[in-house]
Length: 469
Image 1: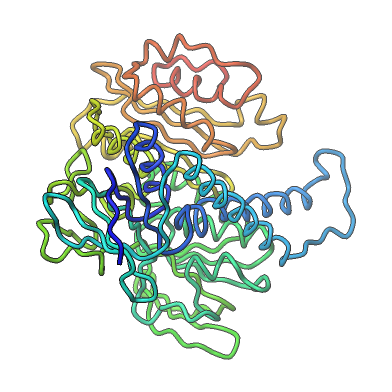
Image 2: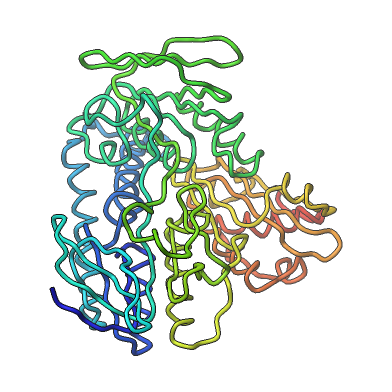
């Protein structure tokens, strides 16, 4: 066994870990990344990136079957499902190789293996690295960043079996398009898979225990998204409970109870998308002061754990569990270790995005939470049907909602549903980060014709000044 000294050791090479490593290296720290699987983590290899490649393919399939409005005709439209899946895997492979290149470029040492905290030595933190269950290396550094991420939560009786019941991993690499699907869970992951498979032609049913889909979103946006998805042919069951699950040779029958009435739903495949569990096991937390709350490490606003010199970022730490949040935490922690002045990341300034059709994006408080916090509100709404670019694109389905504090003009929240809103939400994120008020947003000039004009109109609407509706 060898011992190697670093300034920073990062356990996990996902979007939090590898970004932390790069930033620390830019600040002239000696850095090691320990990764047991693939660089880029779940996000790049089995999450954010490959799902977007799949969703893009499904959008193209939808467009090819709806060309008449634009004056086109396409006969015998078909797709090779294996090639659709292969392209998504190639995209992930390309980007994972890109992460490896970036780490080499910044002279970050990458060690393949399973890393865990292993106590201290002369005031230094120790991290042991094992391969195939055998310790191969011990690394030391005054600072360790734990970025081990999370995995899919499993419901008893609904564990993935590789054939009939899928987690996100199986759902991304099917050998063929199933004729029907039951998606359990309607958060971003569940709704994105439902959207992909429906747009590819499968019959899709969503089951959600909460009273509405996308439960973290503003209720009005959630209701709009539900109607849009049902219009596409999805069946959505909310306030639902799962009962018995019976597996056949090539189908699954699930008992679903809604409003006290039970029904049998038979589908070819089931996708379980009911949240995540932090990867806290076997990483050496025992014997440390680090606290774990419901499988996630407890941290302060600077991602410091209760153990001196140990930080935790990304999905292993506090919500929201989003890749861009993890990356920003990685930068913050690297700069903190390097002695720079940093600011904690406000969860209310972190955008949330769901890449279904239509897309959903938001930042800040929902109307319900803003009211509960005691604010007197000004709420603006503007529909995409009032936007020239949206109509010209053939995408008039959507709306933008803004929520302001009536007393100060602060933008408390912004919520969007429609085409490409995941690209537009950043405008409101900048407004919140820069502490802009309604006064600045009203005076902002938006280019015409763009769908981003709906953002301006939604601000004006909060003050009874919308121009195009």
